[in-house]
Length: 110
Image (tube, rainbow, N blue to C red; front, side):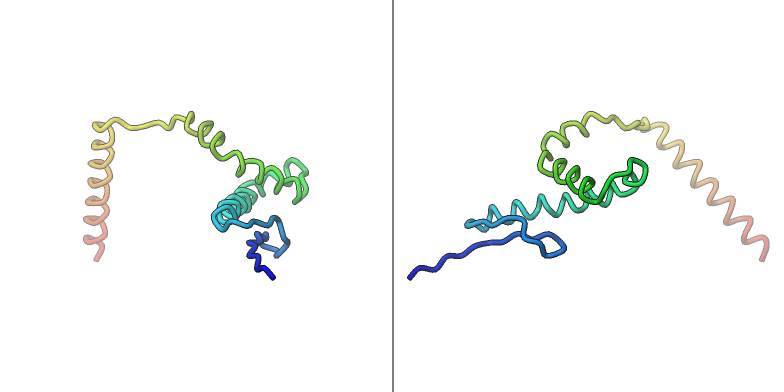
């Protein structure tokens, strides 16, 4: 007689998705499935606009999750505007001045 240990990965509904003999592989697959479920939540607003079914949204999400390295590379190309240190300091000074003015006005009312 032999004993065989299997790791079964299920989705949030409890449906079996895959079986593994190695725990590390099961955990890696599970992390991708969890990411896919999170991505599907991000895509929900697009579902009605594009008339997509839940299965289609999940398939897109799963594909993006399994292609995470390529998705990360694509997202790294996005450049966000950065304020120069001088502009950032000027904005902070203006904010502090506005706060002081607000405090003075509120203390005069009392």
